[in-house]
Length: 81
Image: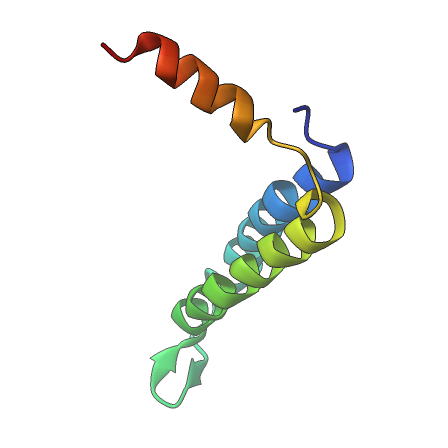
């Protein structure tokens, strides 16, 4: 299965761009959120955001994809002694 470019962009490229731009913009900041440096708070926020983007990508493009699991079972049966 070849992934769709939109799926790859949403799930992989967008989080990388967000983290890169966020670190570049917030790296020199001395601001804090509840006593936590802003850059650290941003990075912790990016964990669920990245998971959300991956879920959106799966939901829009990959949910109904055919992964040929039956073919894998046949190959496994041929290889097993």
